[in-house]
Length: 279
Figure 1: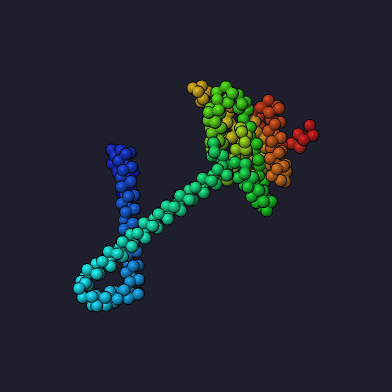
Figure 2: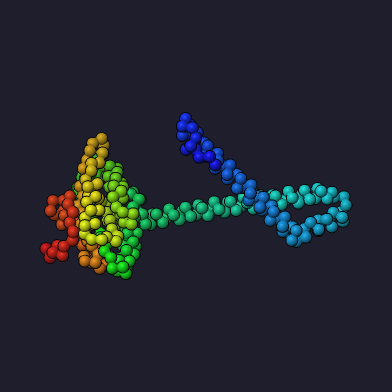
């Protein structure tokens, strides 16, 4: 098939779309024709296997008023009709399966992903956290949890409305996804709280670098209702295994570090320190 992108530069986008659609339709029609031919051949093979033609010939000899050519033609018509019917039924079943799989995918997304941001929700986060922890224990590696809370987010909802608040949450989610590595997980923990699961980190320096990228990205202004608005974030960090050896404890300690950040003026990054629990 010719590459639409290599056509003359004067070809418009709509013409390219029409070209591609036409190619796809012709390809699909060709596949349908091939299937019908194959089914017809299968019918023919079955007819030979079960001596259908000999029986037809014997029938024609017994009833000589029937024309043999007409009977063969009738048989071929019935064979093709049966093939077409079978093909259409298979296509209907395939479409039904596709729709069912689509429905199951929708249910799965509702169960494991946040509907507003598209990020993994708390359920999926816990599953991934359990997997990462088991892997870290086997390989004797570290991973980190970042507990992120947006400062003053309630004021946005109260002053501008929940629609603008939702837009901020969506922007925050996209900004964090742009700064983490492919192996990391960004999840919405609830409300304006997010968790970043940072897998297989080499040390505090790497954690600091990625966290600072996230922090700087979140500090950028949001354009809401025609005005620039800055939303700061407080981030608490807990590292496995030094800050906890269970999922619940790591999240708790990252949360504690986050609140320590808020207590010291908000818009800061804090690593968990066991002294926090003694205060």
